[in-house]
Image 1 (tube, rainbow, N blue to C red):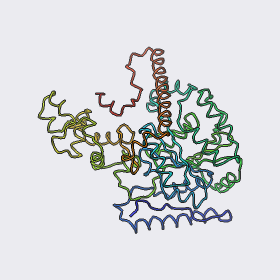
Image 2 (tube, helix red, strand yellow):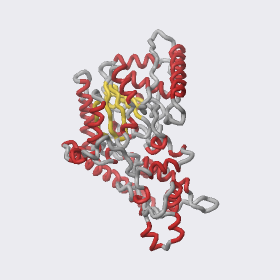
Image 3 (cartoon, helix red, strand yellow):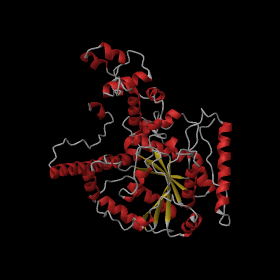
Image 4 (cartoon, rainbow, N blue to C red):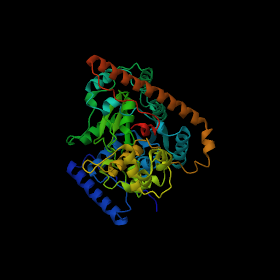
Length: 473
């Protein structure tokens, strides 16, 4: 049985129909869709998926107004984030173009990126593929209490380099040909790459930014106006939660225009931004498509919020069965931790002399990190489990998929011409990211000097080494 299920599709409608009639038809269709899924599949076999009709409505609106649909997928788990039902609906039912944006390419080796590109091209012949990565939230955005640092960082005009905008422009140019004037977009990208674009870019129109959460009495008229405007290219950004869609959008614009969060589904509404006078971005809410994949895999891939996982130990067991958690995190079994002295513990770290359970993994991580319960002072295994899951979701634990045949053909992908190009992009991104982090550190230092504060400066640099956190006691 395939793990792929169909998606709910908007019932046929036209402008002669009343809003009430359209909504009633949608409600009836969606109810029948949900009932059909639960009738055909056991609930324990079903993945977590979006059951809110309003969220699906916003996706339909984005698909309707878009000329090109950009499906954003985390390159670590692209097959989880690329719904075949969505591809078939957009390409065959709506007769529109699809671009797959493989995001977060800095988290995997370049040969794996190239292998995934060719896998999708072989499976979906009408999809164009671009690679993308952009800056995650910097430390000033994560620590809102550092208001002075945040203000100074926002004033800086030079923004970090984002991989992908130029490649996306080239693919859109091939699709649009001469229908839409894209020279302003090309100029914007060139300006961003030089670091010379003003933060108050004339292309970004705050009046045109909308979450469209207001009453929608005139939504049909809005859609009709957009569809009739042939001089504007509308890109619809679609993606499941935690694929980095908001960060990708910020990377396209060249500055932060939408907030980002590690919580899946952070974007709640259909949002619109004019990238240039002739290029419009429509950002849809992240929603999970129905499937039959394992729920534990969904959690590790960021499709379900870690904070809402009531029993995380099953997910830890799932991860430990597929990735060397004990060795890589240098865990000491609880039995050895009680019986051995400090010198012996150092030699026992990462060994599997005793059988390990998911609970043992969490207990050992809690011991190593100093996670204790508030009252009893025992190892806080629940907090430790959540910590490990977050490390996996954020990419600090290198957990990812290989496409079929990757190991057998690894030498082929290592020597592939595209691999060198991807490697150069990753290096350029890494250098720019380091510069951004240095700027942030400088901002913090200047603020401390201005305020004559003697507090210890917190470490704002995020290490590229996924195991660097092990040295932080």
